Length: 388
Image (cartoon, rainbow, N blue to C red; front, side, top):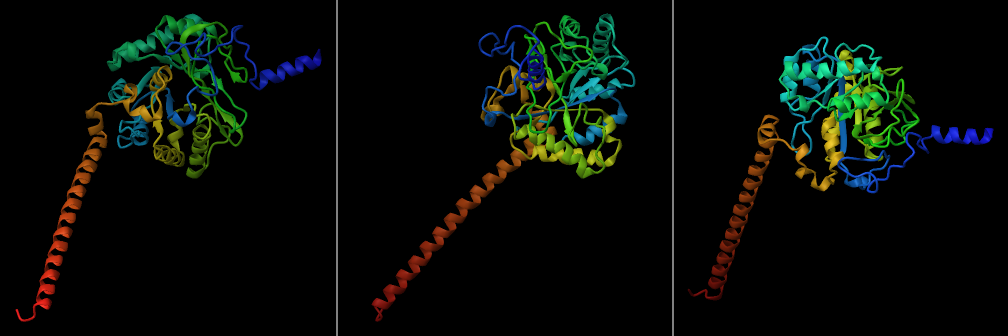
């Protein structure tokens, strides 16, 4: 009996079984896109056909103090391989927020999501309902944003309300949550993909404080907050490690090593959850800046919002066709503002100029050759008929 219990506990610990629901989720059998996606560590599409998605999620107030860091780190010159601007998601709490700054970021294409009003402890269902409802109203009315564009929620301090949380968020027409943590054991282990809660929360080596959802919440997306690893310890937030980086190189290696574990691994979206306190030290800011530069040097890496990640999850598009994916596209105006359209036009004009120069050069060479042959013929004629 004791041996059997020990084996069962081991299986649970290493994520070999699930205990959330009695029914096993089977993609394409009892779960169908775009409304349902089973929890998994391996996407059905071949990893070589999957764009590596990177999403940044910043918590708390948005104001001019943090805006200077966001403007630097996610500057307009930084674009994805399709020429469109990179994006981030802001989980906004009310206290200390300047909604003119929020409006500016909405116009830039950043995603606005909800992180409560006062960032206090939400210990009752009624309080969750009030915080999730009223803060979304604040963002919509004070920043002039359509309410149906605000669909994401992150719990303060990641304290969730179990099944009640998802009942309430669904009632309020939210479509996804990013509050529940998954902690892998080491850098070589894969991270889970986002999934819908049609079959509950399946993982056991995880953190749902105080409780995980056990019921079905059909069509509601959960984006696991996949903890990063530094010095073999998990860090739920990038800026919340027990031992923080002490140099720009340390900060760079911390971020890029975690990125590479996704990029070279199962290609699950790489989430970077953080607070603006990361930017208090110039060296951590510089390290992240270098990491973003290197991530964008890959032609198959896209820094997008959480909503854009979920649009891809609902309608997976192979990397070869990603330039046709409407959810990641942008207007000509955006591409002009970010300089990518101008660069493409310059490259196109330069290509035409080089083609014309090549044609003219070929004509000149052929003309010179023809002249040379004519001269040689004249000389041969003179040599054959010297009396002339």
